[in-house]
Image (cartoon, rainbow, N blue to C red; front, side, top):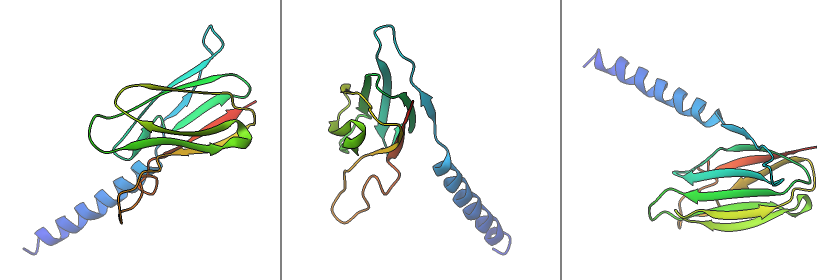
Amino acid sequence: MKTIRPVLIFLVITLCALSINAGEMQEVYTAAVDADGVQRIEIFGGGYFFKPSHIIVKKDIPVELIVRKDPGIVPHSFVISSPEAGMDIKESMSSEQKIIRFVPVKAGKYPFYCDKKLLFFKGHRDRGMEGTIEVTE
């Protein structure tokens, strides 16, 4: 019993450190402009994450986000509340692809997130289901 306790403490500390570092890692995706002049990005959501969680797009060039969620009963949404930048979006996600179109008009970093919440539990955004759209010149 005396040797098991230190091993358990070590495992708990290690798992906590790994979960903290995992939350800091972001997959960054820089959108390319297709031949038709549109920046297209596929976004997958589920399990309190978006992938990619950091997207870089160019200002004044049309964007198409192709969003979908993992199969299952947990509802998710895709929300960007930045009308000053040409992005005012609130769309329910499903396992079928949905296309969201907009033209970013102002450089900067803008959050996107899931606004779903179940009763008294933490909301999906509070649990890490958020990301950033970075608009560059």
